[in-house]
Image (cartoon, rainbow, N blue to C red; front, side):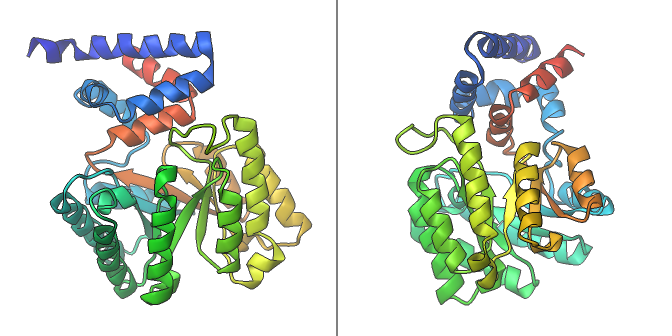
Length: 338
């Protein structure tokens, strides 16, 4: 009990130490530390057992229940934006845990239909059993997509560590092409991986429904661009491939997940030069981040979708948000001080 009472102070000291690391060594080093902490059990205990931490994390997370996320989606819709909803959780260790997540996602699809909110769903492969057995992931995704088909909705398979890309793409293509889930299933590609140029070219030729993001996992320099500038340049290059005449002829509807105004402007300018309609693609941003930019793009006639997570397993997601944008760490510390 005494330890729990001291947790806010311990957490504050812990975060100040991270902030000093940012000051001394720069964002790249801090990002590596935060990504390590996103998987550290001791750090998860320290952060998740502090009520103050949840209050700050709730800026990025709708709540812990499906009712919470439906309320958040309705609020997002009222601002003229669409939503994609995500039940938090990853790296389950048993088939029972994967089944629990699968059933919650099926329930989420039902609730979207019943509530009438404008939202689709994103899922993590490791949440549905990828690390237990790829066959389990396939079976659970088949059940989820069956419900998506029944409710006339769509499910996007998020991408995780680079070691899972081939398996994830293989299962995605099987579900899309062999099992008849075509327009109901999509996938994510991460711009920081060297291999993504080849993956995007292939997926564009297939007319795939793809979300392009920068990537939020710790990867070695042999696998991913170590410099942010290189990732940014590749993001723009891949976005142009997804908006190319060949991709559009195949019916590609690109989704660009970025909060970087430079990336957004580059995509807008390319689309204008190519005379691509504003409704032929969409921008996606995370719940609680760059709300003003979200509304500005929607007001300008662009399609805008907000990624809204919910659930009790919020810690890894929250730490990756800190890693993606270290300025969020200062926001966290300021709230703890108050």
